[in-house]
Image (cartoon, rainbow, N blue to C red):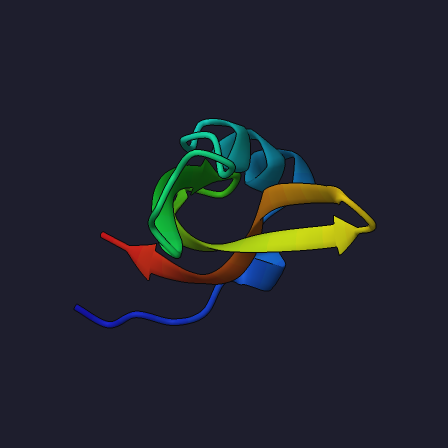
Length: 73
């Protein structure tokens, strides 16, 4: 299976929808999660998300950010 980076080809709406389908980052313990999406044009891709935190004062926010995406068959 040949895999190539396709993150730049995936529209932001699909990345956002895939991130919302992941578990709550505040409660999750995994550093990385993956989600499959179908990009317009018939391309299927697996997006790998990384879990990040943002701190400001006493407030901590957790969120998923796209790390990479690979074409899948």
